[in-house]
Image 1 (cartoon, rainbow, N blue to C red):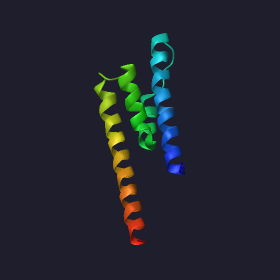
Image 2 (image 1 turned 60 degrees about the vertical axis):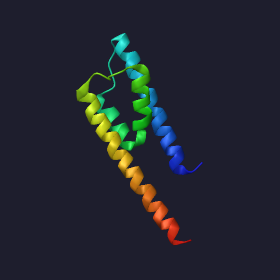
Image 3 (image 1 turned 180 degrees about the vertical axis):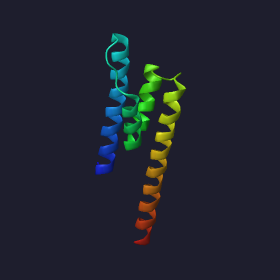
Amino acid sequence: MGFITKYFAIINGFTFSAVFTDKLLAKLHWTRIPEKMFHGLSLLGGGAGGLFAIILANHKISKRSFMLPYIGCTAVNAMIIYLIIIKTISTFSLFF
């Protein structure tokens, strides 16, 4: 497994875990994980794992003030990944 694959597996796993941890903290009425943390993790590449956990845990789904920026951060990250892949493919194809 390459570095990038490992990185995305780790960041998505961490984001997935953070969503479920925040859900548990909410149920226990304890101090919660700030929403900015989720947006930051999404920008760092954890958007897919976080979105999967949000859907599974039914956590923060109805909160538009959270979901719209979160989806926006995930979309920005997806575009960056797409551009990196396109750049890699075009650079790779120059050699063949």
